[in-house]
Structures are given as C-alpha cells and as structure tokens.
Length: 315
Image (cartoon, rainbow, N blue to C red; front, side, top):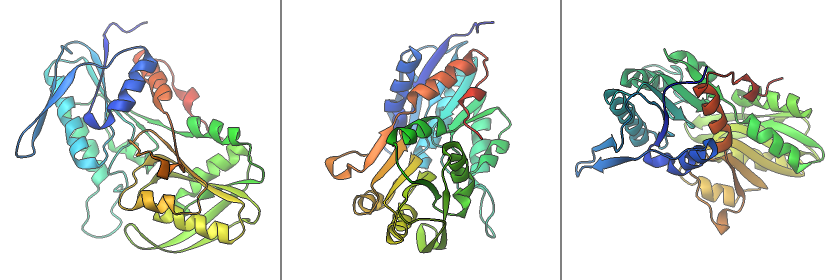
C-alpha cells in the first residue's frame, strides 16, 4: 500500500550540499526553512512552509558536533510542534559515537546521551552511516537504519584493478571492518597495532601480516587528526608496500589533518560526503564519493515500507 502522507525534505546548515543531492536523487526539492541567529550565540530554526501531516526527513550530520546536533534537535522539536506526521532524522555522520562506553572512571557515555536527546525531541526514526560502534543502535527506543558505505567503496576498490591487493585495519578495533572487506574482495588482511599515548596522540605502530610488494588499502570508519592513518602508511611503506591508500566513511579531519595527509606517503585518501571536505589543488590526494544516491534510495524504500536489506554487503 502506498503511503498517504506527503514526504518533505529539510536540512540543517551543515549538510545543505549533501541534502540537495539527496533530494535531487529522490526527485524532490528541499523544503524551505531558515535559522535566526541571536547576538548571544543562540539560534532558532523555523519551517517556512507547512509540515502538518507530512512525513519529513531532516538531513544533518553532527560535525563538529555541538551546534549541528543542537540545530537538529531544535528542527525535530519544531516539526513535532508543527504537527508533522513522522519525523526521520537522517544523520550521515553521527557525532559523539566514540563515547559509546565508560572506558575509564567518571566519564559520560555521550552516544547514549545523544540518543536520549533525539528521542526526547520527538524523532520517530533515525538513519545513519557506519557508526563507530554498532551497539549504539541499541541506545535508541526508535527504529535505527544503520547503513554501510561498503555499497559505495567495494565497487570503487574493484574499479582500481590493483594487483597484489591487501586490506588493512588501522588498529585492532578496526579488524572486524577490514575482515569484512577482505572477505568480500578475496584479499589478504593486515592489522596495524598501535599504542595510543593519549586521545588523538598515537605512539608506536607495528604491522601484522604480509606487506612487502602489496598494494594496501587501509579501511576505517573515520579519519580525525589523520595521525593513525599517516603513521600506519609510513610503517607499511617502510616494510616494502608498493602503495598505501586510505578509505574512510567520515572525513572528520580536525587539527592538522589536511597537512598531514598532504605530506604523507599515502597515495590517495577516499571519503564519502557525509561531512563537507575542503578540496584544493594542494589536497589532490583526497577523493570524495557521493552517498546521496544510496541515501535517496534508502529513504524511498523506508517511506514506501520496503525492505532495505539488499543495501547491506555482508559475507
């Protein structure tokens, strides 16, 4: 049965470019909304058209997380108060996902708090891509569609036609992800083991697996400061790798990340467009693949109550 409620797309200020591409792929236009900024730093989103009785999809990555997260929460609240039928938060990059557990005494579990805030704001469903920790889905009391960029990256990797290809994990935590790609592509796997001195500071890295004369692709869910990826690439090249490419879903790229990548031994760094990426001649190593078509297809299937399991590449 076809849905009887009109579908509308809106976005936060951080994700407008991606939202426009998603709406275009869906065959729709972005709805009209605006944000009023106040001198003290507060802001107030508002819808400039009726959303009464509509199923609305709000597209907003929460990066850098604080303002964009709060803007998303306000947009959800405004939509519910304006009598929207359903509100779906499309969060391509889910900020605070690295705070998924108490890894030391007296710290918060930020991902759980964000889930609580989204539910308290009135969200009916959440869509996101490549969570840092899959168990975050269980933090929500509403349905969560967790999508994987493997649908984008696997065809791209195959199109490279690399000889002697190996898939590498940048650390032990990424071994599961790398193993999935390794099985899909039928390639050997390498694990880089790191000792982290403190948050965002990487110490010694060692590589486990056959490296010499291999074209290596390091798979990760995100690249933040790029310290781990760059050091891993250097270690692999020192051990005789032909080339090292990094592929990650989310381009967080904080601090000196762009400079580290530009000056690294990495052949190429590939992201999706879940987070806006700076591009310039100096950053020619960075390539961005669009997630818009995949997200538009998922939205269409969810809106029409169709299965989305075909979008999951698994072994």
